[in-house]
Length: 226
Image 1: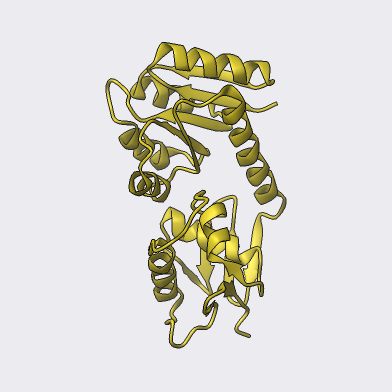
Image 2: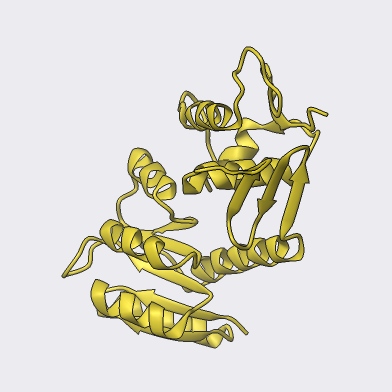
């Protein structure tokens, strides 16, 4: 049995979500405000947070930032803002998944199940080592030799996902789907930018790669340089 905290100010939507999740077997808490939700998440330590953006006291994106300063709990953004740039920004800011309003209880439950499966898989393999690179998935710490790498949330997610597939070429489409939770790619440079940041922090360049190798027209792979 898992627990979910729903932060949503629209009474009808909140009640629909709470009822659907409770009927699916989850323990569910809810609140209609950002600050009340923040306090509830801290006190109850749920497995998943469902976060609306249009809250009466703070914008949900600001609450997401506050949550990320105190917790690594997976967050599903529930939004009517079906805008690609906004969704990418929120995922980069620390959201793990999103659902666009109006959504059904079945869709929300399916997304929660997917997040829980990913969390469970990460828990089974909590530490990864590739050459001098060491990644602790539970504490979300990556080290290179004796140095701790200063990675933002998406940099860590990207690096750790590639580390679970050492030596395999992972397509850009799969990275969008698994790391950014986006079922599309196109001309967006998000992956290129994050790979560039990671290479700099790993002490390499695209011209002289050690760990991160781009296979032109296919994808990218993480390898052991030793």
